[in-house]
Amino acid sequence: MRQCGGQRSPWHADDRHYNSMAPVALQREPAHYLGYVYFRQVKDSSVKRGYFQKGHHRTLSRRGDICSWEPSVLPQSLVLVSRLPFVRLFQSLLSLIAPEYFEKLAPCLEAVCNEIDQWPAPVPGQTLNLPVMGVVIQVRIPSRVDRPESSPLKQCAQENLLPAPVVLASVHELDLFRCFRPVLTHVQMLWELMLLGEPLVVLAPSPDMSSELVLALTSCLQPLKFCCDFRPYFTVHDSEFKELTTRTQAPPNVVLGVTNPFFIKTLQHWPHVLRIGEPKTSGDLPKQVKLKKPSRLKTLDTKPGLYTSYTAHLHRDKALLKRLLKGVQKKRPWDLQSALLRQRLLELTQSFIIPLEHYMASLMPLQQSITPWKSPPQIRPFRQDDFLRSLEHAGPQLTCILKGDWLGLYRRFFKSPHFDGWYRQRHKEMAQKLEALHLEAICEAQNIEAWMKDKSEVEVVDLVLKLREKLIRAQDHQLPVKEMTLQRAQLYIKTVIGSLPKDLQTVLCPP
Image 1 (cartoon, rainbow, N blue to C red):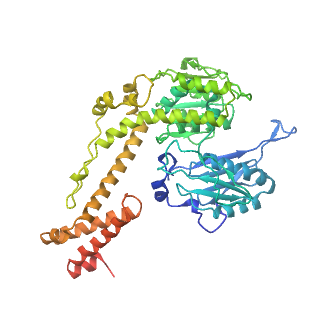
Image 2: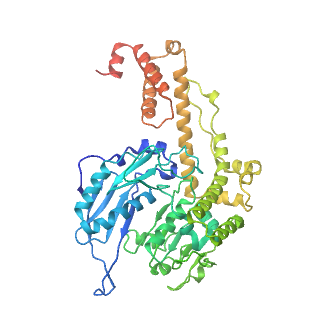
Image 3: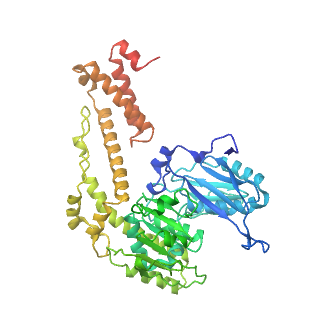
């Protein structure tokens, strides 16, 4: 790995600070990197395959949170690696950099890296102007306080930028309508499969198509975080090929994007396989893939289709399909079609999640039960049967017109990685809120001196240690508390330590 520059890029900022403000679906994951690739094929009649494809990638050049591969000989690919899921931004960045890089090689990459080093940190809620190669890319980093239906980014009028910026409406959203065009009639079933974390293989004609369709599928659950593994472009050369293709155990909860027809035979035992054909260049809607039984998935020349035995729990949203088809007939712009599709999927996910959120909120102890000098009460356990009974009066039917077996869908959801991920995240947030309320109760108490009168030194020292621990967590953006509360906590710690003997004061506050 070769370091292009000595300074630390703001785009490799503190994960906890960024994640505390970013939407759950756009948070950094320390355990994973995402790769964005720009690949070119140069026609060469002297080569048997018809294309010149040299370029052995050997060294990695890292810039903060963004990395790029530097080839040893004539390059055909440029790979950008990041832990930020900003698909649209990084695709746009690569389309600017790669063509120039293929011509000028390392000096071009060095100059780009130096520019990226100067970019401001990606702070959620802020609009950034990112200069690169004579162009300014303007983007807004989404925040967790944004309304899901908020309007796209508008160019900042107060800044006279020269040259005029290239404004990206989103850093992460794909053109859903273009990605889902061959499978629009089955989008709702695919949404259910994603919600339940079902293993799915996407076989497409090209890496572009497989990657974009896999990313579109994993994004259709927003604002719910996708908690399963996914591989937008998986090949036989992948180090986990044997693990993911073995028949000795059930397929894992993974969405695989592939292009090699060999996988049809290798992954016949997977419960769901989606094969799509060559894209249609005209504006008309391509022929929709049909539902087919997995038993028909036998030959390498298997026709396009969704091969599955799964039966959808919810009735098909015919109104959505009608609106999309009408949009095709009227030549409605694809970005508007995508917005319509994204909004409907968002509403469907929210209708499913809202009853869970309401029930989860009911498990939180009442604020008046939190007292300063006692440990905070515990969050009550999530009881699936109690939740299912609550659906009769507070279920998704209040916000969604779709009929179907909602109870059955929830029961299967409870067994999925997405329920586990959602529950852990919500329980963590509630525990942090409970801890913050307890800290506020301590800091607002007026009788700390009276409380200390009949307490042993051990109990007083224990209070100091607990307050310090809470204070550190709050300062590290792990507890949602106000600045005034932090100042009071520091004052309380000072007051309590001052009441102790000198030897203990020295231990708690070493010089």
